[in-house]
Picture 1 (cartoon, rainbow, N blue to C red):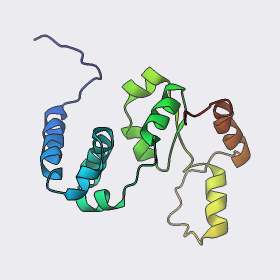
Picture 2 (cartoon, rainbow, N blue to C red; picture 1 turned 45 degrees about the vertical axis):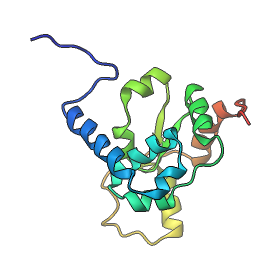
Picture 3 (cartoon, rainbow, N blue to C red; picture 1 turned 180 degrees about the vertical axis):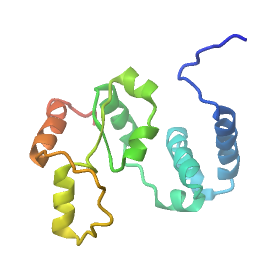
Length: 157
């Protein structure tokens, strides 16, 4: 048996995933709203539908500002950090692409300042808090670190 490395590496569920996207592509044609989007926007919409299985909700509630996809591509090519709200998203992102474009993914869900902000705004049950203590960091340190590489980036208008 010969093993072939594919770029990006494809996992065991690749055939199922490919078929799933084919089905979405076929089914989305039945929605008039889908005709309002270009092929790049539809690629993003297809991923959202693949994740949520909610055709109408995605199509009725998504909006793309002018040149938004191009702007995001430029930021990612300039090694912009990707901020996610839960670690599950962080784990689900492709290491192949993150390493290729050198994008760091950050999630502040376990940071001390996240807990402090939540405690100030909401009453949090101790049952909901994880047993591990969050790291002792200051929010301004993280934000300064995060925004530093973005200071010199000029967006294409």
